[in-house]
Image 1 (tube, rainbow, N blue to C red):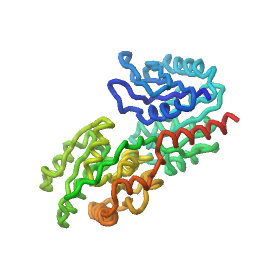
Image 2: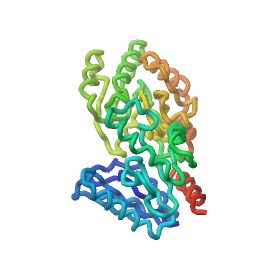
Image 3: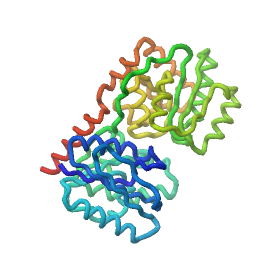
Image 4: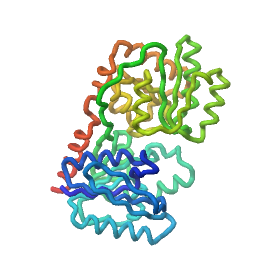
Length: 360
């Protein structure tokens, strides 16, 4: 099939992690289909290039949100690019802004949604809530909407009457698995240093674990406005030498950081698929997470705990429980709990089935 992927998020030289999940999906689809990617880059920058995605042909169109004519440019570019396509596959609700009314092109239309605001609108400010109210009706238009987890699928079903399918994100399997490190537990948190990820609770959880006699330490990967607050909290709790803030890392560096850890501890208040949880399991590391996450779809109870109570003692209980129950499991046995669920081939096959249905 000839697939046109239209996305506002895609990796560029200066932002290689942006929309990486879209690029991985396009590359996987390119192994079985003729795939073209139209990156509608609304940054307003003319001096950047979109990165390659396997055999998929990638084209970037520089646009500016403040220019009304650019919305017309986007509409025209998609209509022309879709002229010989069998399937149009759009990504992200914000990417549908030029099509608040009407279809982008007269071909079967699949839309993948990722915005956490749909499942956690309470995390939005006034502008975000207004944007959600304006954009949400556009979700009624696609022939099929695709969510990456049941949590997001349920939110989509309240916004549209048409079919909603679930296809997970791609998490590339590691070439080899690194054995779990011996000795004191090395906890890792991954995500922005923001309220929604609650890194302060991760630090407080470490404090409780150490009060209970567990010689643990914490590394946090990610950047954000709470960096100073996290460092201050660690110092106040006497943990400055045991809490490491590594900032933003590349996907390869994140993988190495997971390999160096014993388990993921992510006190998130709201996540959809949660790539870092899937990656941790794939790489043979158990997880503890807040319970408002799509990771509940795929994490086996023997290697995970999902905590509803927002307290350090509850998260510490979960960490100790998972460490105890998974103590004799190898990295290979933990990874086996998710098998090839997130592999490029599995995701490509699932999407191909959806394309066949809407193209019939």
